[in-house]
Amino acid sequence: MDDSEIIGKVLQGETELYETLVRRYQVRLYYWVLKMVADQDEAEEICQQAFVSVYTHLGQIRNPAAFSVFLFRTALNQTRNYFRSRQKMVADPPELADGSSVSDEVSDADTRFYLHRAIEELPEKQRLAVSLRVVEGFGFSEIGRIIGTTANSARVNFHHAIRNLRIRLSEKNEL
Image 1 (cartoon, rainbow, N blue to C red):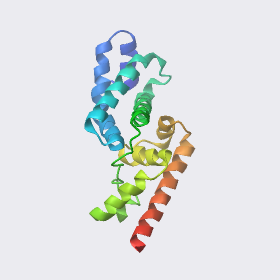
Image 2: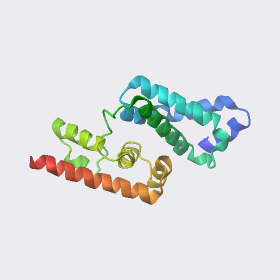
Image 3: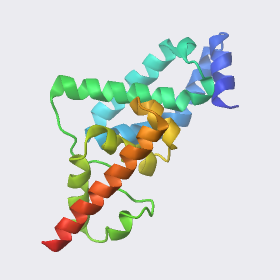
Image 4: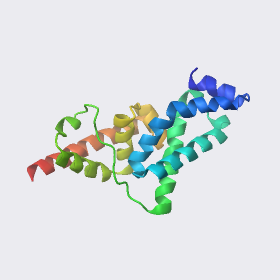
C-alpha cells in the first residue's frame, strides 16, 4: 500500500494504519534529524513530535503522495524550534558519502573533519540541500518543498554548496 492509500484509510477511521507510515519513515527521519542535532534523545523527541504533528494535520495534506515531504518539512520545523529554544549549533553535519564529486576528495580523517566543519559553516538552505540530496536521496522538487523554496532554488543551493565545499577543500589542501 502506498502512502496516499494509507492516509486515505487513516482519514476514514483506520487510524492503526498510521503506524505503517511511522515504521516506513522513522529510521530515515531519525538519522536525518540526528545529523542536525547530534543528540540521540533530542532526535527521538523531535521525530516523535513530527509524527504526532503530522498525524494531527493529516487531513490538511494537499498531496497525500508527498507524505514524506510533509513529514520531513515538519521535522525540519521542529528542529529549528529546538535550536531556537536552546541556541545550539549543529555538531556533526552530514557527510557526502554517495560518490558525489566532493566525496572523491574525502580520503582521510583529517579531510573528513575539515569537510564536516565546512558543511557546518554553509548557510542553512545550502546545508539542508546537501543533506537532503546526498544523505536522504531526495530530488530537487522534494527538497524545495521541504525547505520552503522552489525546485530550481533547491538545485541552486545544492550547487552553490558543492562549489563552496570544493573551494574550502582546495584551501585546506593548499595549507
